[in-house]
Image 1: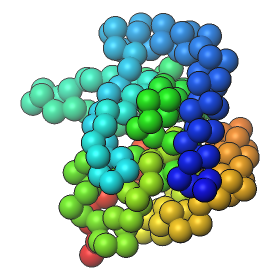
Image 2: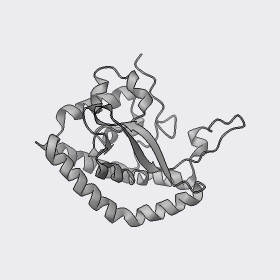
Image 3: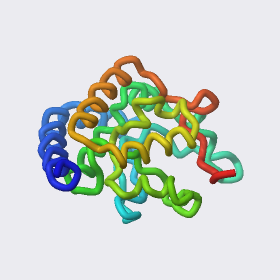
Length: 201
C-alpha cells in the first residue's frame, strides 16, 4: 500500500511544502549562480526514471562550461566554481529537484537518477533499480554517497527496491540530514564528483 499509493502522496505534499519553504533560498542561490555561470543558474540533463522512462532532471549548475584550446570541457575540478563548491557541500544543488518530485518524475527517496548512457551497462540485478522512481536521496547516499564503489551503490539501490517502507524512508531522511550537516561522501576520493560507471568487469 505504501509503495504504490501513500509514498507518491507524501512525495507530492512534502516536496510542495518544502519548495515553498525553501523558495527564498532557491531565489538567492539562483541569483548567485546566474552571476557565477554567465546567466546559467540551472543544469538540465536527461535521466532514466521508473521503468527506464526518460525525463529531464533539474539541478543548480555548480560547474562552468570552460573548455580547453581543443574545445573539450576542462576537468570537473577546474570547472567547479567557488559558489558551486559551497552549494555542493551543503547539498543546496538538489533543491530544484523538488520540482521533479512534484511533477512525478522522481521521489524524495529512491535510487539516484544516473546517466542514460549507463542503461545498457547494467546487469539484470542492477537494472532493478529502475523498478521505482529515482530519488533526491536514497539508501546508497546515506551509506557513502560518492565515496563508495559503483558495485556497493547498486547493491544498496536494489536492496532498497526490495525493502521499501514508510519507516525505512523516515530513516533515510534522518540520515540524509546528518550526512548533509557533516558534509560526508561528497567526493569519491579521487574526483570532486563520482567517476563514470564503465560497466561490470
